Length: 333
Image (cartoon, rainbow, N blue to C red; front, side, top):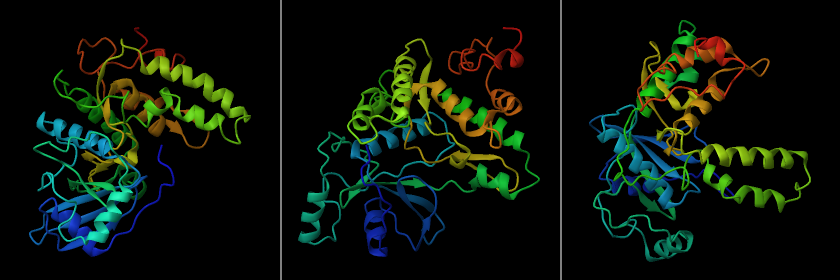
């Protein structure tokens, strides 16, 4: 759980020190808005190379390593709809060559994570600055699909929703080899599903002043369903983004063409259906009546193969998710 989470602020010297660990010399940096927990800076070199520095507030080193490992794996497998992580230009040395002894002592006090985070990796894609892990990703140019729909009245909503389905299908088609060594949904990602499944949040709620709130009974019932669904070995698994809402989809401002997914904090290897359901929640509900919009759902599903598809890498939507609406989409089933 991320206790007392807050966005951090950094001086130019701080930013330069962190970037120096990646061998990146920036001539400019700009604080970016958005993101739930990370403090993000768009940085640029004198030659115009742009990247995003992500200072991952409240996260453990192993969590950031898990994210960057998956992103790099995707890139090497030919999936390019993302920002690629930079390799840290150091191995087994102190966090910053320019820190005073007092700063180093402070960092040691703040960094309480003793997890095995792969410090001996030849290619390390994160550094730790004052107890907080940081990574540097290549910049995905464009604006969020959510912003694009608000600003460009000529951009068709159905085009963007269909594009989201198509891009998720491409992501889900990346094969995870047995020796990949990537984290799975039982150890991290997927909107903290593992913490729910391990009972961390239930214990916290039951031990709080809200223990008798009606929500607790609802949560307990839904938790059983979550554990059952996420543990289902029959569901096709693969790499999921974990949070495929439209604000995490970058598109061309004018054309709406897909440029990449961002904010990969929840990425993991898990049931592909998790991504599909999350995207439906984020895009297919009518904001005025809180009802599932059948047209939007049909449009989104068009990006995936039909339920009769034999492609094992891109599974169809299972009919049990929305039994009242699914027959109208695929009446032949």
